[in-house]
Image (cartoon, rainbow, N blue to C red):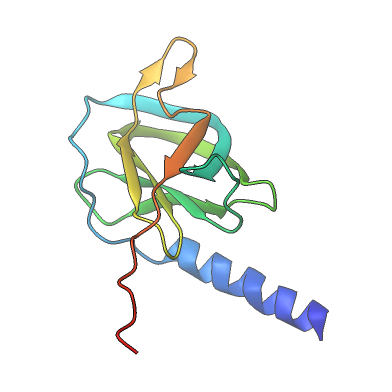
Length: 129
């Protein structure tokens, strides 16, 4: 049963990678060559790892996703980026947390994406019941 659930999860992640993301809210960046590996960690505001956070690279000004992945049990992700030209945005999403979007800029030491991206929990309203 566990193997079936893992196979279904893998198919769903693959399908999500092919589907367009919602609109991007970051500022445009100048054209650049996107290629290589983007890796890091997704954490909460207390520094604890967020498991199964979705991370993606989106072409700015469109809903076209270049690559999507998920964090592992330690909050780590690793994306292999294709060779493309244009402006891109890094997105991190997790249920119960505010989404993070960062305009990607290539620097001499790599990308401007922090090695640890912190996500803030969405405050929940106390139940009236």
